[in-house]
Length: 199
Image 1 (cartoon, one colour):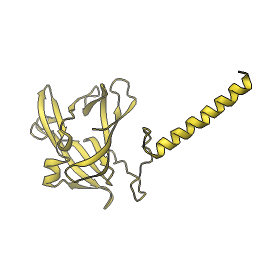
Image 2 (cartoon, rainbow, N blue to C red):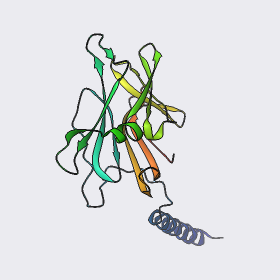
Image 3 (tube, rainbow, N blue to C red):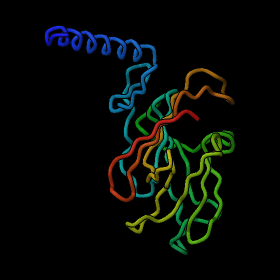
Image 4 (cartoon, rainbow, N blue to C red):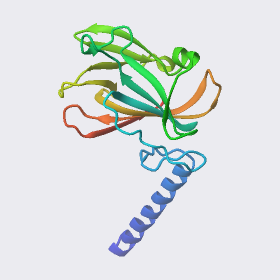
């Protein structure tokens, strides 16, 4: 086989591969990780909540652009997390306003976005989000001396910063979760880490 024929085969294969990739992406079969331009069905960009020294991480969902803020609840007497309620969860209302805080309803707190906590000793806490309590988060101090939330995804530790949940259909009590995307940093290198999985 001469060089000219090999060249034509190489070009054909490249064009074919690109066509397959784009077709797969169109039908949702390619794992996409670029979330820098995420918008809702009305074309509104998902806002990044402004810095808050108490915030551990925030959570957003595909239903609307509201965010849930998970803040540390420090006991002023001890300077440590409140043993009974180490995390305060509340809404940041962007869909209806400009990110104004709003408390969760009882049902949201007890069955969806609230958390349970269990003291592990040495100022560490096992934290679980109510709607996905099989996934462990750990509240503890990092090398900077501040409290953070840590997660283990794909056997790698992440200092969690935000979560995005893609939901399509299902019901209020049993939503059809397409994927969960977690973003944070590697606590050793400080590099950004993104992990996406289907629960």
